[in-house]
Image (cartoon, rainbow, N blue to C red; front, top):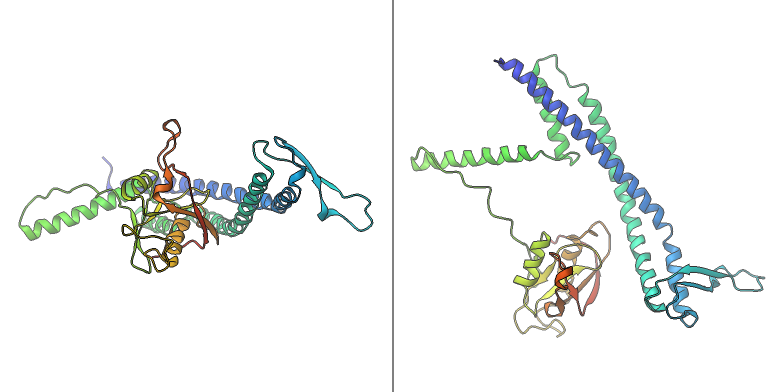
Length: 337
């Protein structure tokens, strides 16, 4: 049978090895992020070409044959003084789209790359700093003081782990969360048992499934947002009514957001229930709870729920919708807390 000191030494050895693995894994994750952000920044350097191609398509629509997959168009931007002929630019286009639609696609990609460049520069700095901190933590782990015994060494290791978790460098273990929840439940149970005089009290589960995110607009209207694909379905097809306004970051994954309106209100009537500030408020929530939350400006689609359709059954997945009519507003993401 192990004596307490041996048990503490074993606990330290297991915790130390696990934390070393977590730090090593986190370092690999940050290195992968850094490589990804650098790649995005390099891709963003090609953004100007996309804009030039889009402008060329709009100016020379008459030169683009229907069904063409490759075009050769005048490159007036490259024309130099003394040139006898206008240089030509060649690039591929989508044969299924018109010249105008292809131009719109090039402009969309251009805007995405510009946003991507802005966000990636900042995220690259953050990932680089996180990797530096993890490398320092890895060095500290190899020098955890053990001379004062396994108990103090284990305590020092726990302090180091808590610091890493608090800074978001490693994730808290699921069993740690469970232990804390159970400990809290036991404490509550004991307190209730003392106050009621009962010896035993049944500890219930860890609570109900989290509800939707809810907000209040400046005018006092309620805004509701889903926190998962299934919650998005419940918000859009269960909670929202045909006259409610539905919001979603345009062309990007994110929460379904609904601005709840009194029946009979009209967003288009001046002084109506949905004021411009209410629409901007809900759009900022939709931008924040999307994959573009790190961008400075985000395009958000909004429409009445009546203009949404569910995809065909064979293509349907939780959270998927089709928009038959939309308006677009560009906003800065905000959780509006």
